Amino acid sequence: MYKLFFQLVFTRMDPEQAHHLAFRWIRLAARIPVLRTFAAAALAPRHEELRTEAFGLRMHGPFGLAAGFDKNAVAIDGMAMLGFDHIEIGTVTGEPQPGNPKKRLFRLVADRALINRMGFNNEGSAAVARRLAARTPVFRTVVGVNIGKTKAVPEAEAVGDYVKSTERLAAHADYLVVNVSSPNTPGLRDLQATEALRPLLTAVREAADRTVPGRRVPLLVKIAPDLADEDIDAVADLAVELGLDGIIATNTTIAREGLGLASPPSLTKETGGLSGAPLKERSLAVLSRLYARVGDRITLVGVGGIESAEDAWQRILAGATLVQGYSAFVYEGPFYARAIHKGLAARLAASPYATLADAVGARTRKAAQ
Ligand SMILES: Cc1cc2nc3c(=O)[nH]c(=O)nc-3n(C[C@H](O)[C@H](O)[C@H](O)COP(=O)(O)O)c2cc1C
View 1 (cartoon, helix red, strand yellow):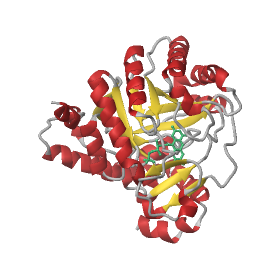
View 2 (view 1 turned 30 degrees about the vertical axis):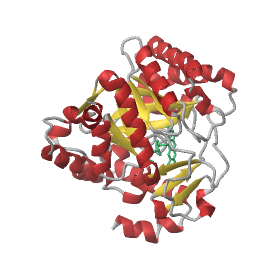
View 3 (view 1 turned 135 degrees about the vertical axis):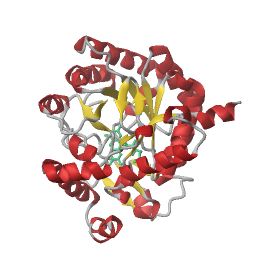
View 4 (view 1 turned 90 degrees about the vertical axis):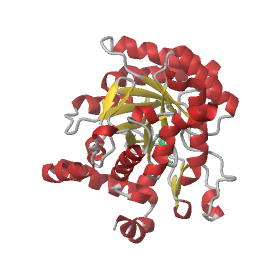
C-alpha cells in the first residue's frame, strides 16, 4: 500500500517537499488523540524480551530514529507513535542556519539510497532548547540530542560552538551526541582526528556536567564510515580513555565506488553523503571493528543501511546495543519500525540467546576466538 503510494505520489515530488509533506502528516496524526493512540498501539514495540538498557536508559526496544529526520524536535511524539523507541533529534548547531542551497536531497530509488547535502539546516540551539523545555510528552520515549558545528564558526572556534549548544540543550537530552562526521559542513570531519576530538569531547563533557549537575547526561560520538581502520581504532581508544558512553557508527559516506550503485550517474555524481542500502556493508564493518576493540566497555549504536529486521539483528550480533534507521523509512513507510521490532523478537526467540543483551556482539566475540 505505502509502496504504491510512494511510487505514485512521492517519486513525482521533489524529495525534500515529499519529506515535509510526510512530516506534516505525522505531526498532524500525533495531534489527534484517537489516531495516535490507535497508531501507537499497533506500531510501538510491545515485546517484553526486546526491553533494552543502554547507557543507563531503559527502552521498550532497541530500534530508533537516526539524526537528521527531526532536526528541530518538532515531531518527537509523531515518530514515537510510529514505533521508533528512541528519537535522535538534530543535528542542532550553536546558531540557526539555513543549510545549503536547494536542491540538496536526492533519491536513488534503484539503489534504495539517498544522497543529501542538507548542511545542517536547523533553527539553532536556543530555539530547539526552548521547544524541548516547553514540550509535554505524550509518549514516554528516549530523546537524544545530536549537536554539530555552525557553518559560519571557524574550525578554531568549534569547541565553543559545541559547548554553547551543550549548555542550552543538555538539560533536555536523555543523551547527547557530538556529531563530527557529516560530510556537508566543510572541515567538520577533521574533528574526528584525536588531537581535535580529545579537547572537544572533554569540553562538552565538562559543559554537560556543569549545566546539569544532578544527572550525568550520557555522551556519545558519531563517526563517519570513511575513516581508515587505524583512525577507527584511535577514536575507539579515545572513547574508552575519556569514559564516553557510546559511539554511533555510522554517518553517511562520501564514497561512491564499489557500492553497487544501479542509479544513473547524473544522480550518483551529486555531492553529499550517501545513505541507505549501499552503506550497509561498510557500516557493519565499522561497527564490528569497534566492538572488537572496545567490547562491552562502551555502548555501540549501529546505523547505516538498516532496511530489515535481519539487518538490525546482524548489527546486534556484531556489537550494537541500539540500532537506528533513516533512509529505509523513506522507502518502507510507516510500518518500518514495527517490522524491525517484530522481526527482532522472532529472531531472538529462534536464537540460542536468552536475552537481547546476550546477543550483543556474539558474532564478533566468536570470530575473535
Ligand atoms: C537527509 C538526511 C539528513 C541527515 N542529517 C543528519 C544530521 O543532521 N545529523 C546526523 O548526525 N546525521 C544525519 N544524517 C545521517 C543519518 O542519521 C544516518 O547516520 C545515515 O543516513 C545512515 O543511516 P541510513 O542508511 O539508515 O539512512 C542524515 C541522513 C539523511 C538521509
